[in-house]
Image (cartoon, rainbow, N blue to C red; front, side, top):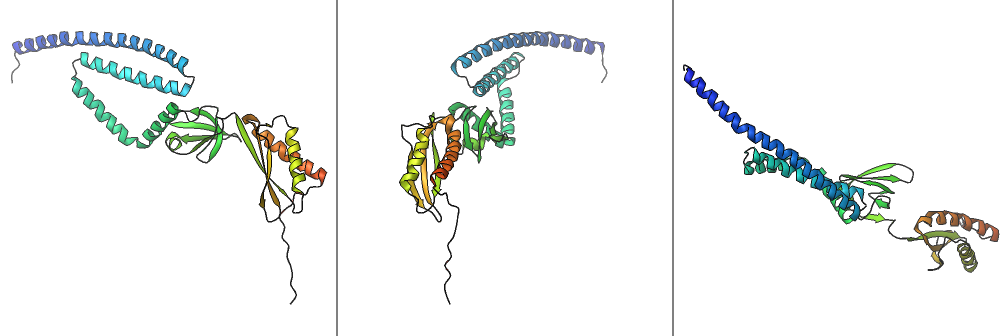
Length: 275
């Protein structure tokens, strides 16, 4: 096919018309982006201020802010695509197909994501709480959208996926102001239970950390193989639970030694018969 000067002139004219058609759309799209980005910034600042006043949970606030930011920018880019002449139905179809592909490839992560959302919204625990979960006991350091980080009392960091955490039992040991210290003390058979009980209760009376309402109690709980087992229960502030527990165990041992109350060790009596 021979290219004639008329054909070249026609192509140039069409090209110029196309450029004049595209350039305004690009300019409008750029202006739309700049204005939209400015507006999004203002909206996010206002939204973050509202979140800070309403809720002091940084993890939840970061998550909600991220969701709103993502939604606003998706809306912005849909608007830009519309300005450039991209059919909205095609654009939405592409986003839907991409979302489906991502969802299928990240099923496990989406489960953790959903668990993180549930934890942040319903707040079964918060940062700083002591919890027992997934076989671990420790202090919650950070609640992320995918993982929760906690530190055990021997300073090990535990990272737990939120999917399992949201769908299992969690014991929150920090929600109540008071806790009950439960001790089991064994005394030798033949011990005067009344004396042993009064000895233990005297220890609690002299410990200001122990609440007297409800009063501490001491019960004979079991006839063990080598001892009479006493159950000791006393209420205290949550922060004093373990100091009271360990101090009381040591005080009981000292008081029993002074009064001659024996704390037995396992023993077995063997009777030998005559042939």
